[in-house]
Length: 220
Image (tube, rainbow, N blue to C red; front, top):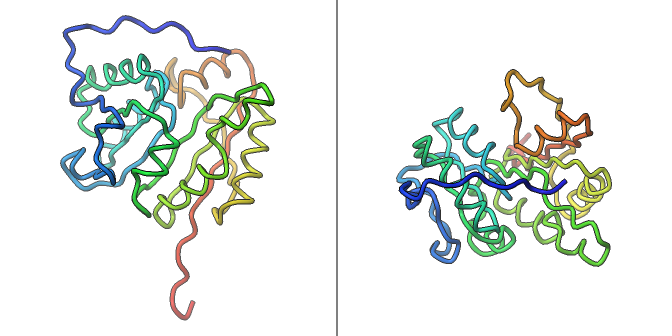
């Protein structure tokens, strides 16, 4: 099920506070400089139209939320959504998540990583392009704080099980922990627009969470 056309962005809307090019971000990424404060940082990989990013930032003003989107027109759309809502604790980076996690993020610097409905790359020769690969999940484990969580959802059962095997075989993250399906209280009470489309169509959504173990206490 492909992405639908985007609504037009108001050309007068200032996106500069919410839209960042990955190449313009200094290495390593400094969340305090980006958000002008120190707060728990959560990262969403592939933000799409930005429903999760905007909803999460609105619901939890004490945390900072950073999305990364490889498609420029979607990154701009997300930035417009954040700007319209005047959310100071959310930003969207236009760039490749694989590069962000490999080269920009410090060890133990992220509270949670969210990966919702990534491109399944259906053809066998393209499956190496899937974001949930060995290098990526290893970097997720590295950047998570102890007790930090990886949230992974997909509508593709084969991808779900393959990703779980990749996580289990290449990290020490505990899980998969089951995630219950939450009833929607209103039309946009979904994690992402894609989840909304799948559930309204009666299609299955596969969900799991993983946690980075906390160090054992001395003498424990």
